[in-house]
Image 1 (cartoon, rainbow over the protein chains, first blue to last red):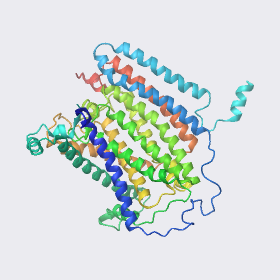
Image 2 (cartoon, rainbow over the protein chains, first blue to last red):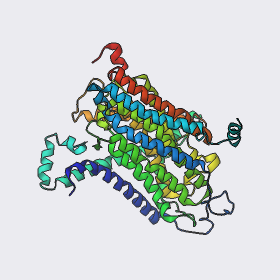
Image 3 (cartoon, helix red, strand yellow):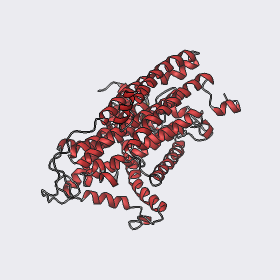
Image 4 (cartoon, rainbow over the protein chains, first blue to last red):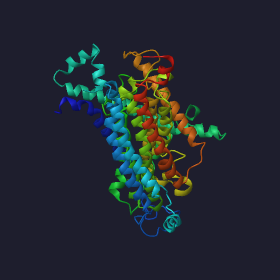
Length: 139
Length: 371
């Protein structure tokens, strides 16, 4: 048996199990009731009626990767700020507010620095203009 | 220990009867109570999700001067049941080139991610399934499973439209998570805790006691959160992952029947959850004006207050969808990274300085000289 402090987590597990059960149940019903007439044409990927050419798993725009990278940086930083934020009020009431604020601000300044760097490098633009980067270099 | 439905009910005398009845199997008792309440919540949210599709069509019809669904049941209210039955009896088609396991897994991930968030949603003072002390943090974390589901749905279909939709969906959801998380951070800062009980408990019933009007920065943070939440749930004007006019149907192009139905259900429940979180964080949650009691009969009133706020926001979400045109993908990214993220960081800094400068008082407290 789980120790008592896990008791509060039981609903989480129950909800997840319910979600999976709902999917399995709905799927089971549809297997029972739905018609089954498979054909090759039906199971071709939809491409507006054309025969699909090649696989969809091909090379993809590198911008998505850059967005992922920027996200990871910011997500980690915001996760690290959560504990500070949740005791900030307590610290303030203890009279440590200014000290906590200074530390908090110095941490946020790293975040701002990160976004400023990405902005300057043009990584926040979806279409990183080739001509714009050429102009910068010629200057 | 965290406050849960069980620990709330345990205050009352009738609970002793149940405790005696189950004797040694106390964990079975709490499991059964959790299960009953979980089934209640899931049933309610599935109905709300279903009625959400109905409301969507009815409100859009209203905005576009049409009548909308009015055939099934009174005022067409049972339309969603008819749609559900139709989805069950439709043939399930899967592309032959799809990745079968991931194809099955994607809607499950969406459903699990959305349902798990229901466990911490504060419906009323005692009617919160489990008031985890990391409540809002847990919610942000677990709801990103939906993003994984969207991306896998697009990837596993092996169709070009789905792939484009899935890629866009993934990049959009993760991007807008940043402003949303930082806006939530500002509220955590004001409330002094991450649990929903703490956050709602430190607000009051009247508008001037809400975090929305606590200070100007929290006011802006609400709008940043709301815009970000629209984007995270793939609602218009940010519905690029499923943009009908360019991507057919986006990440769920290849999904038919029940599996498509689960994607739609997850999306509508997620909108409800997001509105509920907005109501709890910014709009005072379940607080009744003038009362701070946790009695059992009051639970129904608290529940009504919470649902009214949430459903009002739900209406706004639908209203926005049928009013604004869709954004372009580069506009979407620049709104997130160049506008919302800096604004939300500004709000966070502002809230922190406000806390220190005014010792955590709200505007109303300063003006009217409250505690």
